[in-house]
Image 1 (cartoon, rainbow, N blue to C red):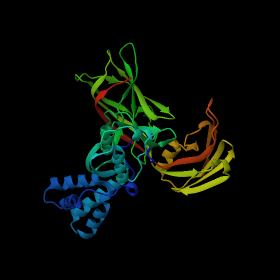
Image 2 (cartoon, rainbow, N blue to C red):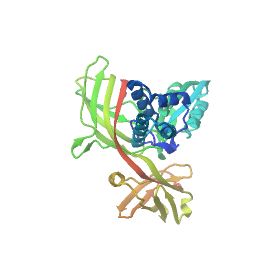
Image 3 (cartoon, helix red, strand yellow):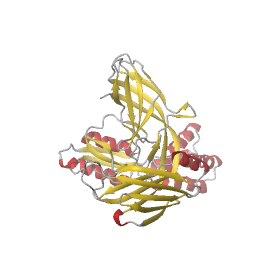
Image 4 (cartoon, helix red, strand yellow):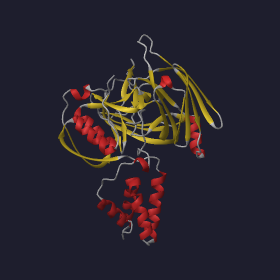
Length: 412
């Protein structure tokens, strides 16, 4: 399941048209919104326009048909404006429809995966071998995360990044808590990182993005201007607390999270509300080269998303990766230059990653070249390298997203 593990998402969340799940909302509702674009009342026309924008790329064919068939100038104007707004939004949610009644957890997640068109792997077989509660779901065209979170809550499962592939989120035993859901965003609740003698504490804000989206970076400031803002932190009695400027922690195995100090004169363990605004650099499209049988590799190439990726084995545990760049818009090229991250992973026969001993990246006008050396884990039996994975961002966007949590219980 190619998700983005690394923690964060977008205010509306998934890549545009090509990867959208099939529309499952009754066509009658879509037809009513289209008809209301020509309503006699301004309020109904405005509501229909807003609803169609939220509906997203699935409404595009019907809007194009409406433009061809309806001569009303205001209807055509509104339809064109809706199309413009849909195309300008960077990401849309993936919607799924699932109706289940007291089915085994494994079957429930298989149904969700089928509806979304992607697998939902368990971290290990033991997840399904242990007794789990049954799951009941009743969703019509609901955002993917809403469905997954509710299924996790009922089955007492949680989501965790696969350290072998930071684009993969696995199901594990454990309670998911009270994640933040804003349309299609999932944010894991803030965690207590450290408590000081004064009563102040450090908070972590980890987040997980939707499928097919990869988080490249979470910048907290640009040109000395803050990009993150903390809007509200209220305890259960309505008392307000200040949160100081955040810093970024970037962990190889657990992705990105933001850490900040909460100013308090006494320990606080429960909050009725925490609200922040966050900036994130995310990738919605990428080029991928997967090379098997690494021990026999000489050179392998692939063309993907306008890039030519070439991998050459230079030693038992090393390789050189060359990426010829395709045509990008000025804005995309600027973001890619600033946040370019070639993800290169070497896996053994069981899919476990090797550590990176060294990595050198150079940029030219026409290509990016990276020489990388992997190493065996110290103190462990030697493993044989099997598969090389190269993941390169091709569509990069910077967005500002609102996040909020309610009924947060902090646990060290």
